[in-house]
Amino acid sequence: MIHVEGLTKRFADLRRGFVTALDDVSFDVHAGEIFGLLGPNGAGKTTCLRILSTVLQPSAGQAVVAGHDVTEDPAAVRAHIGFMSGNTGIYDRMTAFEMVEYFGRLYGVPEDDLHDRIDRVFETLQMNDIRDLLGSKMSTGMKQKVSIARTIVHDPPVLVFDEPTSGLDVLVARSLLQAIAELREEGKCIIFSTHIMREVEKLCDRIAIVHRGRLLACGNVRELEEQHGEPDMEELFFDLVTKHDESLAARSETAPVEAAS
Image 1 (cartoon, helix red, strand yellow):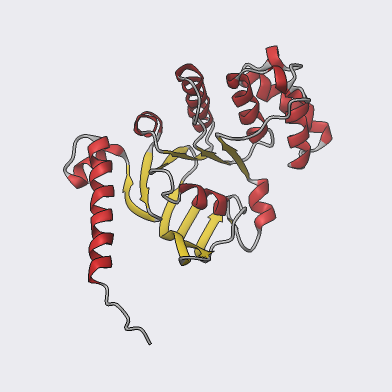
Image 2 (image 1 turned 120 degrees about the horizontal axis):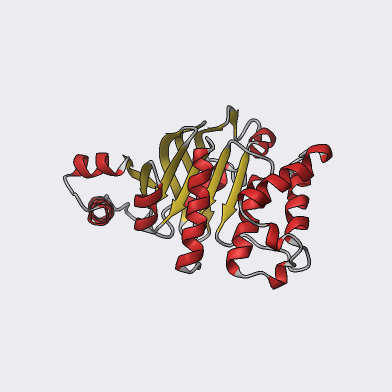
């Protein structure tokens, strides 16, 4: 459902020249699977997800979502994907129903089907009690439900969650993770980005550890623990990140210095 091969993204920086935010990353994600991107802030996770959702263009490599290349056919990709982040905004002066209806129309859901689709989503997410509530009156948990509803209203086969539990209390975060798990049971292909170890261990079928734009390891929890000889996922993560930083520092120290002209 998602195929990423050699994906690279470089940004121009006035002081540092070109900065590589994503460096030759490859992975595949299948239907009915939650694929976790685990890494510290600034690891390149969001850059990767923005490329997959066509917000950014890759500098090199290929990304295909639901059979459509993100560069060659971005409109088709957007029609087959739902994207939610932890800082997704909610309009204060619109009700829950109006917001989801608005995004359904943006996604091109036919008018004859739209209200039936919204009714099913509200029933699934148990949102009928906030159907006519204004965004300004919603709790954080209510807003997250609306964010999920507007992400899935067009019934996309691919869903992307970028740090969706950021800033949430334990109860709201737990409810959100449960909703994502239920979407997997519906056969959705899901990418879940986070820096919280417990979330990937509990939720994800496979995990990719990303640091400084590089994919350091990929597999399910047991595979990674056996491959690296470390039974604790948190220790495994810190070991990989530390070794990668040490390797970068060593290469920097031994790199030849060009003589000034």
